[in-house]
Amino acid sequence: MEHITLLLAIVIVTALVFDFTNGFHDTANAMATTISTGALRPKTAVAMSAVLNLVGAFLSVEVAKTISGGIINEDGLRTEVIFAALVGAILWNLLTWLVGLPSSSSHALFGGLIGAAVMSAGWSSVNGGTVVTKVLLPAVAAPIVAGLAALLATRLTYRIGGKVRNDAQEKATAKGYRAGQIASAGLVSLAHGTNDAQKTMGIITLALVTGGVLHPGANPPVWVIVCAGTAIALGTYLGGWRIIRTMGSGLTDLKPPQGFAAQTSAATVILASSHLGFSLSTTQSCSGAVMGAGLGRQGGVVRWSTATRMFVAWGLTLPAAGLVGAGAELLTKQGTWGVVVVAALLVVGSGAIWMVSRRKPVGHDDVAPTDVDDEPAGVVTTAIAAVSPPPTTAQAAAQNLMTTIPAPAGTTQDPARPATV
Amino acid sequence: MNIDWAALGSVFGVSLVVTVALVGLFTLGIVGLSKQPEPAAQGGSGGSVLLARAGAYVCFGLCAAAVTYGIYLIVA
Figure 1 (tube, each protein chain N blue to C red):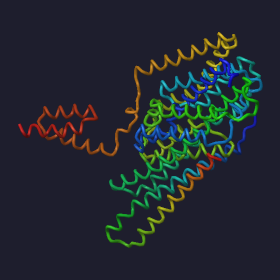
Figure 2 (cartoon, rainbow over the protein chains, first blue to last red):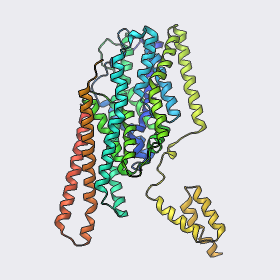
Figure 3 (tube, each protein chain N blue to C red):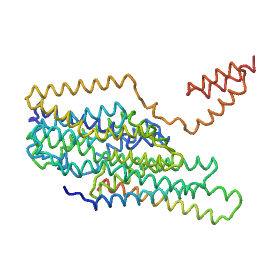
Figure 4 (cartoon, one colour):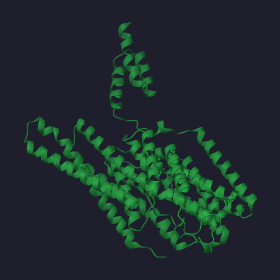
């Protein structure tokens, strides 16, 4: 390890940072619907996802041989180019997280790579055909496939389960759907760990090979696997609550059967696509599945304004990350000081985005479902409380109702007081 | 540019069929289990209850098998 230069160290750290952003950006894919239907509590959900991501990172023995899968010509790829690409991808990931839009981390990485490679070696280094088959087509096909599957599955589940009418049964079935959803979400998490942590290992390994530390074709050292797995798991555990909120309740309102249908569809599409030789993007599949499930229920609506913003973000991912990557590469080309400047800019940029996010923080409390099982009882008691006591207490009860959480406890005490006086 | 339409088509088909089949099975299982108490309370035929219950467990078993296969796909 004595050959690790400053540049190489920076690239490794940056790759791990990308892995980390990838983790918290993509938590939503597995866990957003699980949280919004109340199948798991927010913290439990991200913890489970994090563990499965970590396990997934160690599961697959297959080494990611290329970063881009042939999108750019990786022969003689300089370490600086990888660095510049990572900078573009990280900044785009952070920006989309700030506005709470799910977008593909892999596409951000591809975009950064394309931009940096073009700036480094010209347009000839980009394989245009592969961009279409590996990025554009999957991005369009994934939401359609997953959405249609989720739509049909939701229709079917409501048709079969439609005979279940009374309340107790509905509660019992909801429990069943939630259990099923947890299984599907677990599969998505596991698949994410294997795929995306693998990608980071590939990047670090490639950088080590380029830097002459490893001989070409070497397997990633154990510390690389451990670091990559840990980084993605930590990121996942942090939870990209903004994106979870958009995906879980921003696009549409999901009930347990829908959540189950959506998550199962997403898991199926992801597994089927990666094993039938036509990889579809995870994020796009999950978002599409959520929308499909939203349309599948009678009276269900998709908030198209949010969906449109998401589509725009998808369209912008490649060019935006590419532009940043190109800009970063322009600087790193200038030599060591350029690399240092880019690293500094990355830190400043990430810090600025984080500062902006603090103005309106979104935490795990903001994504929890508002209609968990115990809530209907609370609404009933507050309604009774609001009707029976004199006007003044009714107003107090109404105010209590608006402050949400302490409402049931507060209002059940309120009517008692005028009775004793 | 060489778009593998056949692969895309099979992904489309397989995803659609598997998702709908799995969700359908699971729903059948849930319905089978949830129906069970009602006829029992009415003192109805125990055979149909048992059948519904057994059917439900078969459905869940098939779903569990699918999940296991999914894990196998991820690991392999």
